[in-house]
Image (cartoon, rainbow, N blue to C red; front, side, top):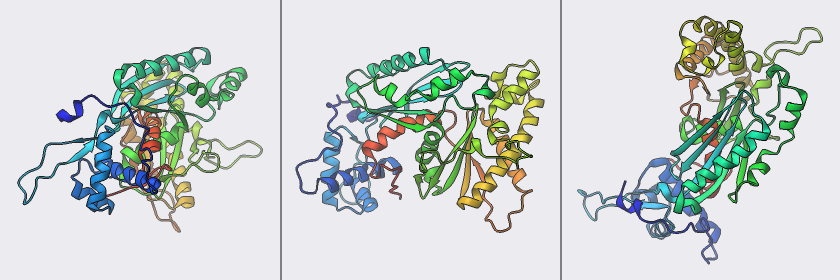
Length: 409
């Protein structure tokens, strides 16, 4: 790391604060545009920043000086060998700001401490059969505050906490074998308010699979794709939706709620089976349990080895057919570039599932549609907690707080 990046960080300023000009709003916006250009393109000299952003060299000089004073940028060694003065690349200071992402799931909770460049500095995990509110809520505060305190003199640079969790953590409780009381307890808990009471940092909340979609949008496939349906296979299965490089939440913030998608026509008065009953890792767990095998193998490499593999292959066939139906339906409604699939299982099983889903798609009649492709996500099991952590960073520093304006090369 450059020596400048190790200097004592000044106390965190009021982020991108007004500076007394009649054009304060535009000035703050331009600062965010410069930060976003560096975030997307890596370290850049001032001349390249001016070219990418369309701002004048004088404006870039003023902006980068202020951002450097605020501890948000570092200067790398001058690049020599060209005609004229050597250029000095400017980069984001990893210690410029921090955020914490918390994922609360049906099988585990994760805490991630993320720095200004989006890199994970710390990670903690708590596993359980199903979360008990009386023990999980105190643990959320204890681990959150431990991460903040671990920053030491940099703790004032914690800009926020992002919580990612299912809208209804107690949903599908009969499938999970939970009582009505357990389901009702979780569905009545306001997780954002609970976490906000544990910290002075501002807390934001997003549906867990939408948060995972944010991580893919910012740190993964979203750099190349403008519009895509996102699928995340976990204990249950869920999704998110990106339209024109923006997360699309829908009226209730529930866009991409594929778990509830009917997978066939209703027979008589019975409701049709939902995607969650065919393409979730919960179903793979039940297959393993029926053969007296460890259900936790659904989440690691054991799923593709004996004695688990036979049940995994049967699950793959059923899940891939159901997911193919979801993909075709999504394509008909959304006319998207691609479908990005990720999950909390091993990458080899993810690749098998994608291959089988793409194979199932070839059996559909695509007349009247533009066929789409299913590709692997690039973030992996951390996607939900990472997406939560990215929310405060972008709320404070991105040009477009509505996820996310892109300044590309």
